[in-house]
Length: 315
Image 1 (cartoon, rainbow, N blue to C red):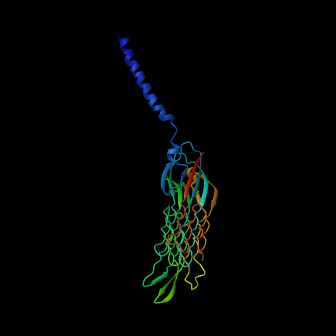
Image 2: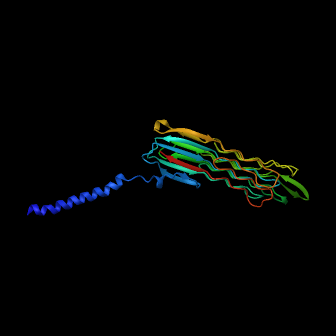
Image 3: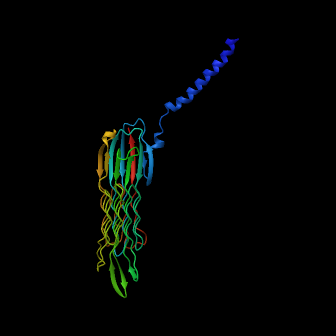
């Protein structure tokens, strides 16, 4: 009897142990959800956090900053925004580490009289373009407001800032065109508004544009273009384009076991200056293209700068 009564208990115990082992196996052997965690491409501006797969030996990052917005029109077309920079690097020693990612937003476009383009958000945001407005004047043709600077894009490890830090700056906003108005029956000419500086690396944002000077870019970001200088001839244009961002950078702390090699780095190109002609003025090329300057007959804002991008490849 003791033998026969013990068998069911042993059988039940054995089955229970087998069930526990079966339940544990899928967890131990499951493939990490790489695609569900770190994506291969981030194109929507904003912040992200993901973890590098445990088995990744090398990670290739391509980071691009956003472009500056185009300048608003006045007596002539506004200037184009500067392009964002780009950098590609290969990093080692990141397996299992968490990454903080930021994709910069393009700077807003200036317009014919009114608020300047908004600076694009990013690791350090771009500066706002200067506004254009008149008081105590009958406005015949007001000047253009400046385009906003593009936001910078970046990647860093969350374990300790500086283990890996990748930055690509944003381009500067394009300068607004100059304008004219009648004061007490006499023509008066006004400077255009400057574009905002592009965002870059570090903690300081791009500076806001003024009239007529463009804002200074954050370290690594492009400077805003200057507004057009007041002149008595309506057949010229002198608003300057936003400056392209400086080459992106990749830095690390080798003693922490993270290595990095820069594969390529390119600065953004400058936006085209304003032109006395109908039609939009091209922005600079780069990670995020600069916005087109306003057509001198337009009533809508100039184009917004192209957004930044981050791509990741594991091996």
